Amino acid sequence: MVQRWIDVVFLHWPLPPEVVQRLLPPGITVDTFDGAAWVGLVAFSMEGLGLPGLAPLPLVGSFPEVNVRTYVRSGGRVGVWFFSLDIDRLLAVAVARSAYHIPYCLARADHGRFGTIVTSRVERRWPRPGATTRFAVQTGRRVDVTDAFAGFLTARWGLVSATRRGRLRYAPIDHPAWPLHEAHVLHLDDHLVAAAGLPTPAGPPHALWAPGVDVRVGRPTRLLARG
Image (cartoon, rainbow, N blue to C red):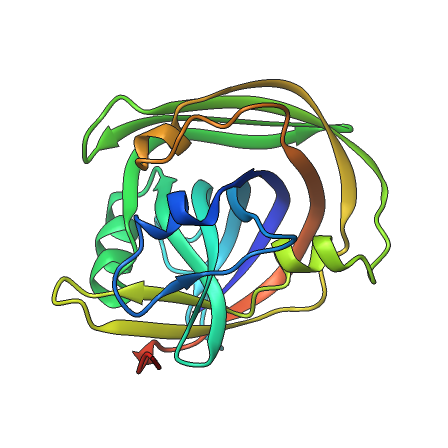
């Protein structure tokens, strides 16, 4: 699939690795930076979703998304593990759950930028309705592309998932390097992280923003865990 991610906001909090690890299936190990696992609340506008060389898919090609994620290792690969992904397109939820085995949720959702202010809102409708998030950030100056921590949080070139039978899958993700900027949180009221079974984050998040990149997500293939 090809797509474009616009006005991407990355909010991250550290957690003890063992707390995150208990929510991962066998064969997947949480990745760490400076001894901590990192849980992200990531929001953006998806545009132009479709197959390479074809027009965007009708009715589902553009929509807001907010996901809760962490970073993992398995079978010699590093990637993103999603706890939830909230969007407002029923067909896209069904396709992503069946094709990529990742936990998309149906929600009322909005995401947009007004000058230097980016806002996002989610109210989950299915499954397990009721989880919400609302936040606003102000974009800031450009971040050094050699920053190792920013790279750990954002430079993830694949996603890891598991089928209902516990078989692990890996799908490559290809896009240019993120044009990252600082972000300053103006307001945050989140319940999506806790809805994933994680502790409610304490303290302000580490925040970044990127104006957008073109993305290609490859076909998922079986991932054989090692050790």
